[in-house]
Image 1 (spheres, one colour):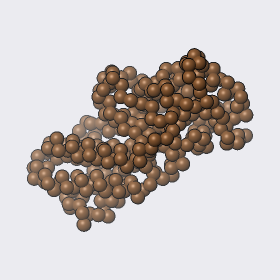
Image 2: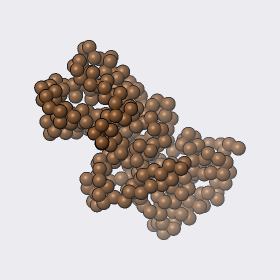
Image 3: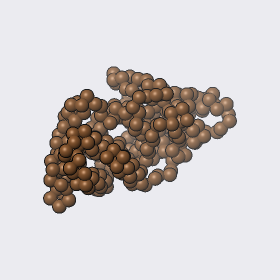
Image 4: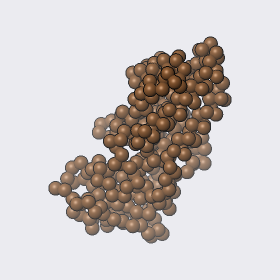
Length: 308
């Protein structure tokens, strides 16, 4: 049955990619001064482990939608036993038991994320990097998605696109997942109910698909960020990758470095500041020290008024 589940996982993964509208415009990565320096000088991007996102509720957001959908459509569309299993999965997932009983790990343990915004001059994003009066934020503008699969790590799987904030759209996608697995549940009922290993693999596949979608689901309250997200979602052994940690607010956050295409950078922005000229000159010097004048760069300052 594994090959059947893999085929459906692949179809659902493609459905997710298609739903994210394949945005082709510029994207902007907001960062600190140290982050900007590292990205430019190293030619690499930091992808942080998904479990260490700023809002931890992101890691199980989709599981708050799942029971709502399952209850709403249970009588008409969902097998009664499958519905009970869904309820059990939600409870065991939220408490951590789903993986703990098998000494397994969350899908998020194997997912690393880099975040961008479609908004060039976003006050909420600037505020994240300017929490005190003396701090400065920057953003790196890319003409389009700047990553490709590295020949040194061909097994890496990237998925990227706009984050989905609309709850109606989220529920439609969850509905499609549930109905797809409900159909498989009924088609392979005897095998799933009669063999513990098959049942375990079936529900791991179901949860794994939900978790993949969850990477691109966020609560509507975050929609002003206009996030464009890139995720690497199958890092299981870190072969060929240099796993590192950095301290953020006292927490050691795991991350990996992924090369990007330098030619895709076309601008660097500076947060609202009274020292615009000096900050811009610092960015230009950093850029020149890297590219040696081979590629011009547009350096600009935010038009948002500086607060004191």
